[in-house]
Length: 388
Image 1 (cartoon, rainbow, N blue to C red):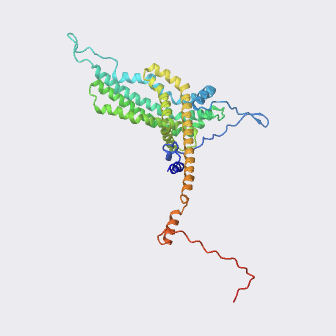
Image 2: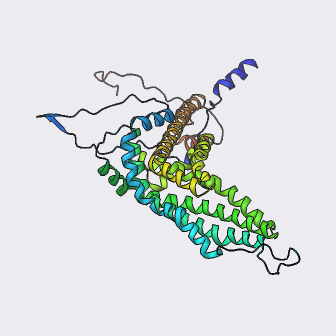
Image 3: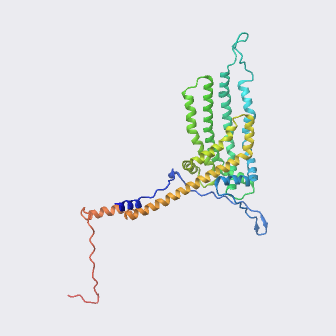
């Protein structure tokens, strides 16, 4: 009995950590970029391609590239700055002008407080509610529009960051940036529009709840709007983060990048979640005030955007590497299990094993009898004459 148990354990298929959502995964290589023409130093000799010793760890490599390629990426961010100018116009000037235009600059909150003061003063609750819904909500919609417009420039910025991350040599920053813009602008535009609309829905739901609470009319619908917008919105916002890193780095179509983003999130949720929290922190700082928002904008536009781009590329690279390893291990285990099953049942891998066994039973009249050995013909010398 013990021998049977040991034999069953040997024949049992080996267990391996599976790749979640394996059916959606596309095992793609890193995108190969066209080599930049090199400068001819001497007749017949060109300038050598520099290779820097960056760490193998993905996020350590991103930080090392940020320091080592700072000058090059800073030049690329200057072109991205063009697409972000509407944001600073809305935040620094138009938001205050719009608030004054809608609400006006004078309020009378002293009405109905006692003898000598006329009635009919402004209500603080109504004024604050109007501030939330008639000023803040439209301004957030305008800012969302500037984000969508700014996403057009992400294609060139991520392309430059990708080439720096993988050490694809380039010195012509202008040519490289606009080459990446021409290749990837529509992918980043579609993806970041999706992310911006989700973030806008979450912000508007919060403003609506604050308005209802200020007026004292908050019901279950206002609370449910906030809960469900965050419940579905936060996980959905992780998809564009991974997709933006995949677009410039891997040989994937838009649909394949979307599917691989789902696979990476399913297999490395903690890593993706930490990177997303790190990325959304500057936006939360903008809520403190106008001055802080302008400072954050200047830092992000000049330095922070390509810093975040490097970390998003590192996230995509680490996720694809992990999925590739799990995918290869699963293929090896499936092959080993198939070989093990073939040893236990020789007919398991035969194409016509079931049909051959059924035919055998029919030929034997329904009985599982062994086949008769064919009768051997004895050797006969052809020179010897047969007897008549």
